[in-house]
Amino acid sequence: MPSERAYRVPARTILATIGLTLATVVAVVFVMHVQRVLVWMPSRSSSPSRSTRR
Image (cartoon, rainbow, N blue to C red; front, side, top):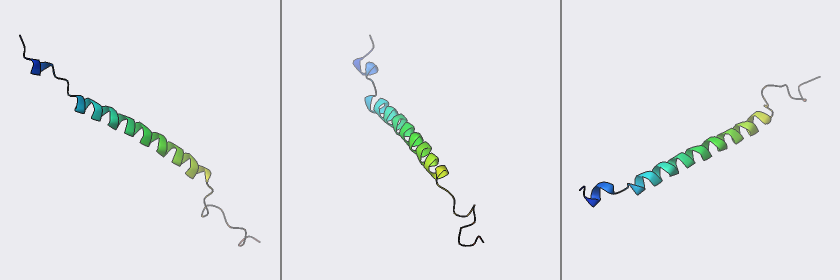
């Protein structure tokens, strides 16, 4: 019969993997929202300002 030690589950490793996966998902969602805001913001260098237009 195998010893009891052979059946131990590495709980810390499993929890760390789940935590890192969730952190990655949260980071990707955050970057997607930040990208959406940055794309929405008008760029000052791409269009001439009104003061220089005549």
